[in-house]
Image (cartoon, rainbow, N blue to C red; front, side, top):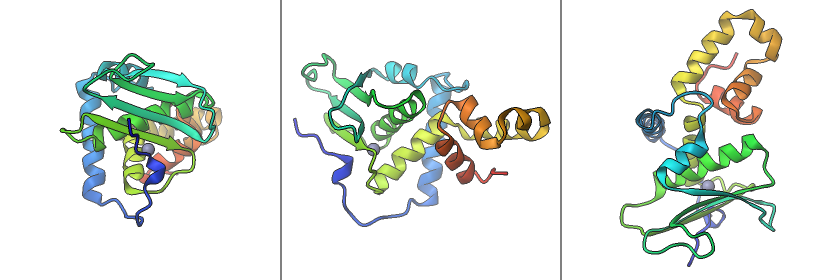
Length: 196
Ligand SMILES: [Zn+2]
């Protein structure tokens, strides 16, 4: 089987258009609603299982590899006994592992074409900065930190002084309740223009 890799994309950097961003936000939120999975923190492992994926923590010998996705509609993937497989590096902490899993689901949702029985991506911690990577990242942020839920959480944080004493910052609060890293929480607040 030939696996194409995210890291092999070397084309010139393109910016995601606003229309595409909105599309990804809306598609992701609709998916969460359809799955009855909007509650926080989003159970991304349960979502992957519902889609039919077997998810396995893997000790990649190359520690730069963070995750990979393999789909083979025609036959089971050797050694893993399934057609739909996601491997997440066991070197990652829980928050990063959740994010990588969401990122791989993003590739599946956004980049797998209907008539493409064989589909594969491999991700490393040296992101290529390609458009497909940016899209999978946005999908992961939108899946784990749904826009309406983040906006509601920001309102709660701003109205309750005790929360700022307890968490120290809005980013720390968002990181905690959505179970994502500070970096990803910050990025999400920034892109939703709700940093304070
Ligand atoms: Zn990727």
